[in-house]
Picture 1 (cartoon, rainbow, N blue to C red):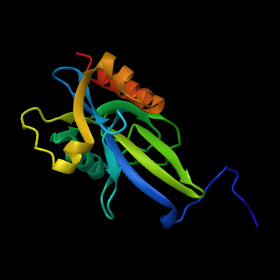
Picture 2 (picture 1 turned 120 degrees about the vertical axis):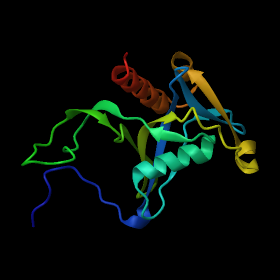
Picture 3 (picture 1 turned 30 degrees about the vertical axis):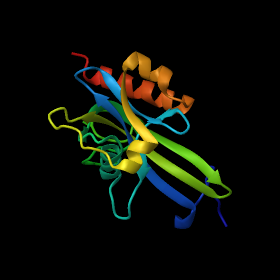
Picture 4 (picture 1 turned 180 degrees about the horizontal axis):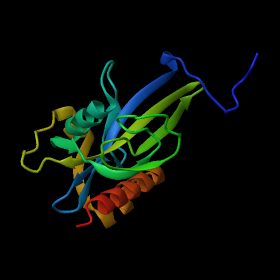
Length: 181
């Protein structure tokens, strides 16, 4: 019996959960949105679980809008990814390529939830729809966390977790490299 030459793990559907979230930018003021969890005084990003049959991109937009109250859109970025092009014209080797204007996840976080259980979090970059006023958030959410915006420089000092700071730093770099002018 042959075994894979790659180090691998396998999880059945009851052992993993998929989430998606977004680093939400207010482009006009060069700010990033964070959620301040009131009970623990932690600063985190908007994300949540993917529903059955829901696309990851749709999950990210839904969760960011539900948690922040802001209508938003995925922000097309110039970025490298190992994904093949949308239209393959032949065999495509597995390597990173630079694509312009794509709305793909820019980070995948893997969290170990316990013995044999994981959480996959697909992260996208989103932009506030500045023409649409924010929705009033429901009372339970208003009591759990506050929605706050910070400048690119200040947000990195606010986020509680190092992994989130590194991810937001990367998102800022992608936005600035894509929209330099």
